[in-house]
Length: 58
Image 1 (spheres, rainbow, N blue to C red):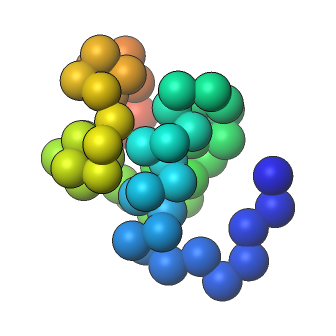
Image 2 (cartoon, rainbow, N blue to C red):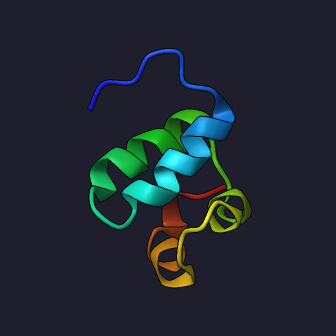
């Protein structure tokens, strides 16, 4: 997936969505923007999805 001119807010929303289907792309966005677990949870990701990737979260 190719993103151009993605804002931090858009990255948070997209990473929360991608955690359900494409974890590799979600990881890329999370690490690129330095997203936190709180941001991703507030964007609608499930607790289980976020807990599963806690090692890459700030």
